[in-house]
Length: 563
Image (cartoon, rainbow, N blue to C red):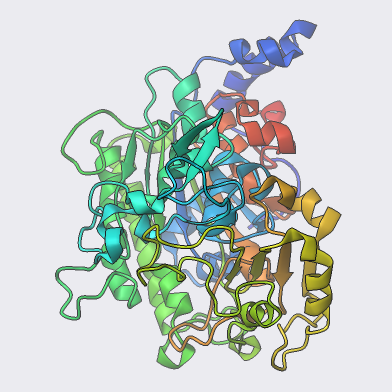
């Protein structure tokens, strides 16, 4: 395979289409004025009529390179042979599912999307029960499996669709123009999405997406609340009625395959012009996609049971090897349907991931327990008895709206995000953390060269000002390999900025790409996927708010000025 850092030349039909765009945008000075720019976008026509975005969660760049070289993923290899492979793609600072997916569909980092984790904190919000917004501000925002109505009052998650509605106990409130209003996930995201832009800019377009939580991913609709026409309501943490142990779909990767098969079928239905359920025929979406969890579950599984990797070179263990085979076969089914419906020559396919998984090298694994949370509690920076967060509810049920307000919060996985109860204690807390960087209790295991504490102006520059309410006061990146857990059921995690978290696979197939099989080694961010999607569809990427604010560029090879 050839390697190049040069931009890739596209086929004649794409070139002709975008030459027309270039003419429109350079014919006069007025055409360069942003106020007039949107009216000068080219009509929706050309080689690319549809974009399919697939996130195989946990897919590292090393997984892509290994499986293609060993012929373990022939379907992905065929896309790479006809497309572009990016070997140096990274998440923008955090790698939880929320910021990871937000990067792909908004073009923004947490600084502009406001999404740091699916379980986070916002100082400006009021409790779900505080419908008058008269009490204490500051709420632990939880948009995960408990966002569906099944979880109300601590109920069991017995329905695949999460119960068919939002859990009102999971929806906080905000005072907007003097009025107390509920904040649904689509209200919570601070920027618009590619789904909204496509619907606004391409006449008669449709949008679709399938993900792991039925109601928490409502934020994909964007602030309008209407960005995704067909948002599949599938809940991975719902109890599988066919499971003899009443388990959800995350207990073992082979069980997760059954959940992911639902997303394969949803995509096939949509390729066939139906909706995700297959019970209506609204037409093929202009932009659509799905998330897959099988690989992530196999990576997290303990090495002693065949999970994870065999070494630091990303040699897959038995479960990961099987999972890669599964996701590639799933990709093959999807591509085959595109070809069957004569859509392969008009559909761009993007294969990537929300996040990686850390550590791949099991010898670097350190399960440090929740030393970060305990250190904060011991010094009274958070409640000494742990009365904060979704666990601190009056009823004992998770996320049922009976939690405490104004407590501050700490979110840990292989990173620590700290929202202080009292922001005036920042300097004192930083001193305490710096005095306890070692891996010996009560240390937080952040004493290595790749660990860091981020706070103050440097944090504000990267993630926004904590005083505005959403951004954590301190980010703790421990040594790579450290997980703040004592769990015996997982040996890898994500969420942080360790190398194995943020270095992702990224392969893009576009019809009529000339000299397919190119490899681009320039460092890129996954935020660049969103403007690339819009450029491929002939829509000005500056319609995305995050793209304008952060100056996000399309990926090399897909810059609108080089088509």
